[in-house]
Length: 139
Image (cartoon, rainbow, N blue to C red):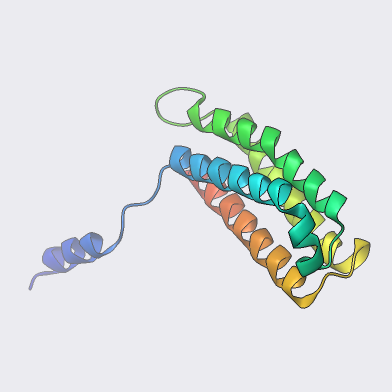
C-alpha cells in the first residue's frame, strides 16, 4: 500500500469534527437539561447530594438564561462561525461555572460522596465544552 493510500485510510478512520455551532448547541441543550433537573428535583437532590435545596434550585434557575445565550450564540453571525466575542463570553462563563463548582465542593459546602461525584462530573463536562469551544474558535 502506498503512503498516499495509508494517509487516506488514516483520515477515514477519524470521525468528522463537530462544528463550533454544533458544540455550542450541545452546550445549550445540556445546560437547559441540567437547569430543568436541578429546578425540578432540588428537594430530592438536596438530600442525596448533601447540598442546600435553595442553592440547587437557584443554580438550576441560573442556567436558563445561560442556555438561552449559548443557544443564541450557536445561531448568531455569518455562515462560517459565530461572533468570537460571544463565544468568548460562553467560554469564560463556562470556566466561571467550573470555578464555582470547585468552590461548592471545597469552600462553601460539604457535599456527600455522591454530591462530590455529581458536582465533579458536571464540572468536567462544562470544562470539556470550554476546551471544545476554544478549539472551535481557533479553527
